[in-house]
Picture 1 (cartoon, rainbow, N blue to C red):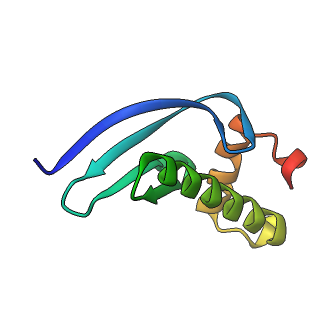
Picture 2 (cartoon, one colour):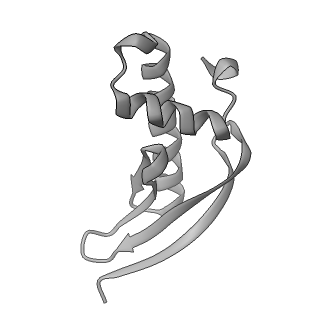
Amino acid sequence: MGEIRVRVVLRKIGRYRLRKSASFNVFYDERDGMWCVENEELALAGYGSSYRKALKDLRDSLDSLLVGFHNIPEEKLSEKSKEIKHRLQEYIDLERFL
């Protein structure tokens, strides 16, 4: 069969409550036996052998992104990273988590 794709709307990612709902693509690749939950606009993706594991990996991906934003001064971020950070601020109170 190959791959099944759907869109889901999330109001939180792990411990992170979102200010507004975010839409994610979810797909299962039967060949690889892997689930993926992704939002390209926010540069977030989670992968796992189950949907639950993919959501956990998505949370870990968000954790890593926030740590990067915390540790890298704004002036050293690439333009693309600044855009992602700006978009993420629409969904998450970055000051609270950084």
